[in-house]
Length: 304
Figure 1 (cartoon, rainbow, N blue to C red):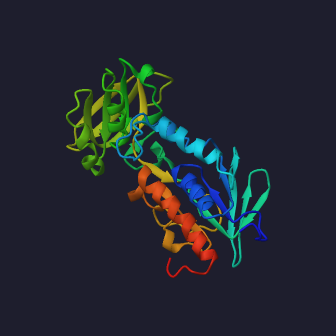
Figure 2 (figure 1 turned 135 degrees about the vertical axis):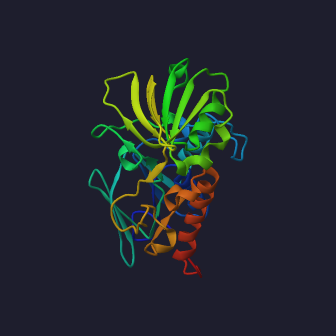
Figure 3 (figure 1 turned 45 degrees about the vertical axis):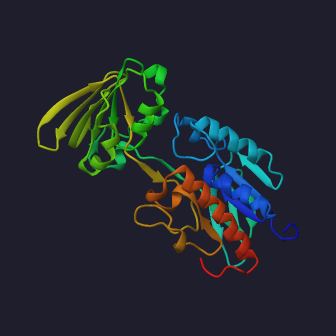
């Protein structure tokens, strides 16, 4: 497809598993691509200490990330634009135009958007009251050595808690997990772990503090009140979509349903829906997105 009048055949926005899979699949069918990623390839995978649900024998995120990055860097038909952020995506009848933060505009027949999600913050949920514009790190950023022997307040019952505990089976870190009723089904895998104290709450108010310790007032789901103290606080309240500005259709929850997009914009990976935030589904979704562009460019796509 090197005779196209555009900069490349396919622009891929996002360098996680879905974006990388899209680039590899595109190259496999002879399509040139430009992959734009503001950080390093598969940056979030490097913070996942344990894996038990991916093919290939990888048991931790860094190992899988290294393998993906090595393959992509050896893919001749893919040009990497790392350290660049997309500031605008525009889709017209005959092309897509992507503007990056240097002001450079890239054109292609199709774009795959695989920017994924980022962690929600306390001000994004109604069951937490926090000082000002407080931001906290997600639990997957916690360093096991630094957390050794300490008590961490974890806000929310999302699944990274189980990943942290499986990755560090001998740590004596204590987790105080404060979670709303909506997260009850998520905490089943950690309920019996002796390192976990579950704190079901109706509402939690973080008190202003400089450094450690952390202090919070919790109203239980039964109406009782208690003060919680910990050495530090981390988030496990879920994620929010991180789609680039421009011609993307977003649902009420901020995600970008693939069927609602411009025909030249293909959404892949975690950005599709909160229900598909898994590494294996992201890899398959990215591969499918590249094939969608390949067949669409040849007018042999019968359905979206």
